[in-house]
Image (cartoon, rainbow, N blue to C red; front, side, top):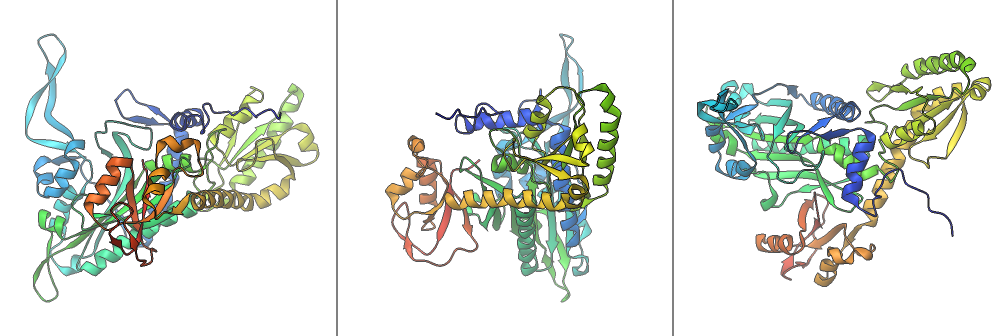
Length: 506
């Protein structure tokens, strides 16, 4: 029998997917748990990914007229109470500040003192505090639209946390806009979702389904919530971006009014939209394998690592001179919005050095030894290929073609993810097969377990709730490209006019 290759990450995906995910983060040096329960410290290799996401999104936002601003971390309790559905949706997740100082207690320790007149909520989202500013900024139709984004952290007190996917504090961007008409606001809501789709597919190489949330899954206080949903390698869904049409609900609550061209006082129409560091979790689970992280080049922390091979002291200066001059040439190249980013690793730790970079997911590994220098060539390994599949390339050719090679890696990762999603997205019309598809006991039959089920739904909250209760399966979205098609609800058998996406989700 052929000996099975040993994986760099244990357990493997097949053995224990949740633990594999944690180990990939650990071995790739992306982040670590914080002493504060449910929080994380994002390390440089992980934070660089977020910086690259920020750079891409910030550029796309500004092309549509959005400007950045910043708003307070603390929100008065009374602000949240203004919009009843909103406060009800976030009440259980709020961290509350009740005191403004510490003083020594009877036992010598520190105790809270100076109770606040009104409790402050640590920002779970900013509709209400930004709405307060908008109410002062807007008085006439000439002041509209207001197009604002902020890069910030938010706190949602989670009970069960997982690095990047669900933490008590996380980083995100939240956009907030105010418009004179309903149609303008709806158009903006769709526009921002299109930007998220572009980020996911063209940069994260993560294919998504774009659609609308059911009423029970909408953002608290929204009239309509639109989303993108991605499939992870365990076939669960990950909500990867949302854009909300808020109607006039928050404008009424925050008193965002303006004088129209007809000299009538009207309430503004508002939107909000956001993505967070959970995208890094999605990136990990979309592309990584049992050897560690895989990073799409367009969003990678760095593009290439140069690995000088120095076995004799006399070769060191020659090898390092070649390596550093190559790094300088590569850094003069642009890939997307940034220059080609190059790492040099000259540690003397043998084969472990190469494996470190494989586990970190860097797209290209380049070995440089005396023989390569003699041939004016380099030895190249790609993260989208097997670790022992390396190619000798003439130096000038490698420099000339590096952006093309990075594009190939980007495309390969996306194509593989598209194929995986396609293979595990199925139309299901029989209730028995639907239940079997999502039943954990059937995991030994991977061909029939899990993924995205495209099934009919009658529109009933009761059916949606019962499916969630019975199978831990939710309606991820009503796809925008879903065609009208007569059928029967997968749960109750009543008439339905289109299919929705059912899945287990993070």
